[in-house]
Image (cartoon, helix red, strand yellow):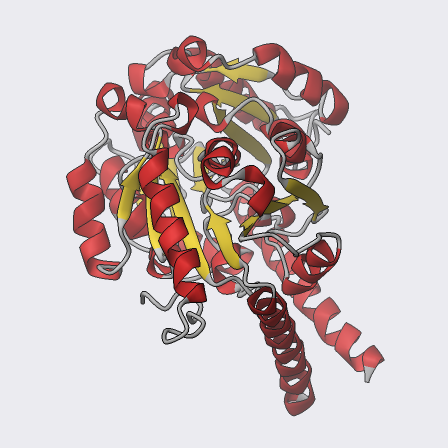
Length: 232
Length: 232
């Protein structure tokens, strides 16, 4: 009985990995860089995208927006010129590679350079699932507190880049950047740390430039395709 | 094979429910009100408790603090006079009734009136697990945005009371209370909405008084023990 139970679990995981690999292959063929955006609820993923898409050229971008309910985030991103697909997970605590595959099927990948996957707001479960992205960008906003890297190390460990958002509130809230840097030194020394105040449009360009370089690296014939989270 | 798989899942759920029921029974016998505190990461659960415990009488309170890693929250609550137990879930996205049972075993329930369970910061998974609490208090902080009730309805549906925290930032952030009220009207009309700025010590007394009344209701001979989330 135990053996059979384990067998079932393995099959599910294998199928999840296979779907993620298939997603990545599709985007590799289309020469698209896929970025999985992860954070707690309300860290500013959608606001960041509202600023980032115009900077990258919105028509070169698509967004798959994951939420349990509502299409509010997709509506906020509508009208910028990017392709936007809302995925509702119901009670699901993270996007799955199957949901991303269905989202990709709804996109016209030709002419795209970036596909952003805005994951469900959750610092735990999404970290465990490869969706077929090329890299992960993890957001932390200052009102959440400066202890979050230490408390959710797995998430920050998997990040190719980390964005500290809502820095306009840092001083008011007594947010200690040095605590974040100290905790990051324990879990992820490779990922660059960008500071943004997305609502104020601050700090966007440095992140956009980093993403352009990552996308450019996909074109380089000698480099080949980057592995997911290769920075770690 | 399918039948066996379903059987295994049912057994796990039954065992989880049985453990939750056992936790509740233990606290009923000790005449303790158990409050499950749920929110996104960084909404201010620990800061709220730092204010609430002295108001309720810290020596009458215990806290089981759930986090993936670190004992930072327990350390923040240490020294107030309450019994505090840190539970590290590792990669677990929510507290389980088994973890709460082990936490309760580490407490001296005699003389206690309140056991607070500070769940893992997560708006999705903890909502699905009865830990044996008598009621749930769900926090939402203004920097998370006024769209969270609509996006995480299951969580807010299960709340006996809702706390809007960090109201000192509401005006600065353009937080629309009417959006929250409108969304709550769709999912939970029974739960009172308390407004707090826990860091500033504002709004604590009304919540403390509500909790005292809920605890008092446990003593009333005619009322019997409240059902979990009886307000819904």
